[in-house]
Length: 243
Image (cartoon, rainbow, N blue to C red):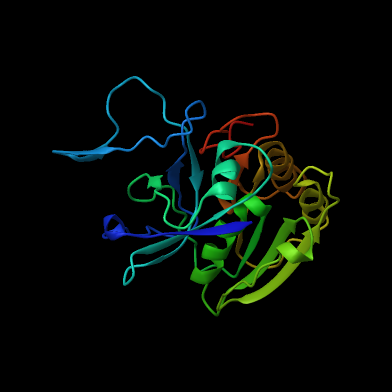
């Protein structure tokens, strides 16, 4: 993963609406290599209505410092796709274009006894922001699949955290180790919640496991497919609740 810091006076007023939110990062035109820039109008910044489609991808704001107007965004480098290509080539001083205020934040239920939180690299920034919101009274059971131990990160939390890092083979699809591990997890006692974000097909597998095999109520689950193998720009709102 690569962490990119965005800054400048136009970041002033940026606010985080909670953990696991997202902004959209706009990419250079694939044909021309040029980055389309919005223009300032009476209602703020907007792209010109020229009929051209803007390529963008959604990412979690990892950290924002209002004193320096700096925003950190973590990118998964996976060898293909506009987001990965841009993050691999961006240089100090380059211009970036992002959407306005973040959306899609998740509000943890901090009064429950425990949280089971799981995901792959694509969900790692969101997982980190979730853990930062957990109180000291919370037990958190965290499962994160990455390529190897070099991709593990320090996770800051006040909660009573038990973290398991899962490593996969270099040619394996991300998510397989996560599914295997979560299928073997014994659901903790007490009132708890489960938050899982990963590849969409694996997400549905796990959602079905928790609902049908474990007999959990839907209200305990927050599942989201951050990406889907074979799909380009998978929908941001795939929660798996259509099954």
